[in-house]
Length: 395
Image 1 (cartoon, rainbow, N blue to C red):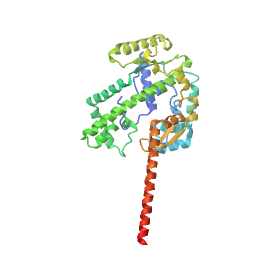
Image 2: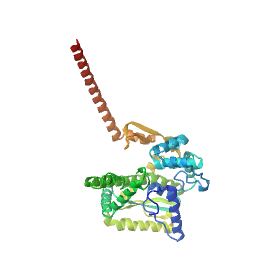
Image 3: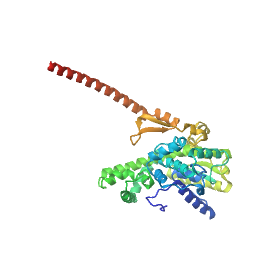
Image 4: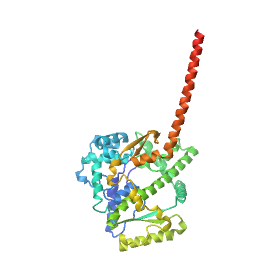
């Protein structure tokens, strides 16, 4: 913590090196590392082998980037994506056109190794059939909370953060923001953190409008709840899929996920503390395959993915999924930047086509078309009448 300057971008491979070094140091002292929270893309890098393209490449074999290549990687995502489409159209189809982090990494692999990221990715998928993907003997505990209860807790946490000095940190970050030339992109570096760009309207107004401040707090709460929803989706689908692959090795290195019910804090001791300790003790004493505690309490078992789910699940992370790496552009819907909405993969496209948002936009466009036709019709009639009237006056 606190060892990266605000103006410095912190990339996943540096995180992997530093986090693994810390884990090795803890192991060397005879202790067990405990990892709490974290951004899922980074957590994936830490837990699994070869889950980010290019993981197997040795740094000694990497070619240094030229000044122009580095500028391309650090430049606008539109230019980076255009170049990736040229050199590796297959992998370009896997990512959304504005997913700067993944697009940057895929192009970086090509520029530094000469290999297409799509070829590297396929090799990694084949490796999964030969051995466990886990870097370490791993026990995963999921602290689950009912959605409504969690939403309230998150709102209260934001209010508490404001009381405990978050506002001062936001103002300090804004001072850094103003010093940058040109104006920095808030989708990169520390500026993308939840709790800064939500307050930009208030900060840029001189920090005097209480309404803008209240709107910033509300936006921060909304973004926090949205991120929590995304976390649950990632756990049940993406993480669940990766962990399920360990079943072919009988979970010999761990990989099972145990759910702890943290909804009722008055029962934290028994439902979270005691149960979590029992699971950890069995794991450490007898090994990953000897844990006798159930993976979830009876009333929450439906939250864990079933075998039927895995059989039917369509993921961009499976070996055969490259056939579905395609972009579908909606002719009627727009994204938050006003650009045509892009869905990645046929499955996501079908979901979008049947979504309420898409149907609502289609209905709006139809009403607008009908309205415009009526307006054009009466405008034409009016123009014809005026022309006839003018012609009569001339005669």
